[in-house]
Image 1: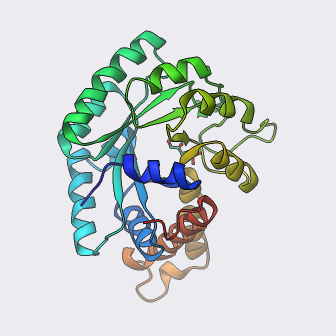
Image 2: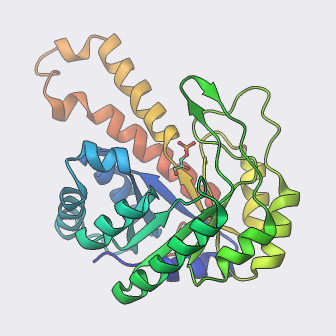
Length: 287
Ligand code: 13P
């Protein structure tokens, strides 16, 4: 059964480790992440962006697939199904569809609007036993070929949003989605420290987990990060393994074109990446 991410992240914050949010795109991704979590006795959060939700034909399909898979694969570790960077409307759709957790991303709106919408969602999530993530300070990334540097959140605004009754908070600390550019200045630990001092026990979320060096990840965890989002890195591993298979001509040998064979190296590559991240985050055997 899917669970809210509240308890697993409170435990992680208190125990000084982080739980990974790995974004899913299809059946192979979901199966690889669920099996890796079970094999390593780790809690896990399956992230679904609005785009990935659409790709998988809608949130109800996602809920059906994940619930079915958890039952058929006997997954017993805590699993949360979480909307990633949702608009207000997408949040309502995921509540309706049976997600166990949502992220409302009001970081692009004026702070008053972010506060008002977050407040409404706090009540809705409480009614449904779901967890809620909110965001302050937008997270950079590539848009139309231009890589924006991650913004640093205002710690006072973080406190304001944290005090609304959300369960965990994403705050920009110079992190960005996708690959980091060569001239990236690294995470702002000064900002993270100031945010943690004002928000106390609130588990903090680090987006853009792909490509952040291990020492920075560990330092971020020591300063209150309890959830780390990884998406691009699984895509890169999947693509590299699939390319290797095709370039070696394996799809043309025997029944190598069978999707169950063609997608197997990419599936194994995702499992390896997820396990490596769980080791770094410290979530193994924390189920
Ligand atoms: P990456 O794609 O950089 O790993 O970021 C994932 C993320 O933060 C999803 O919200």
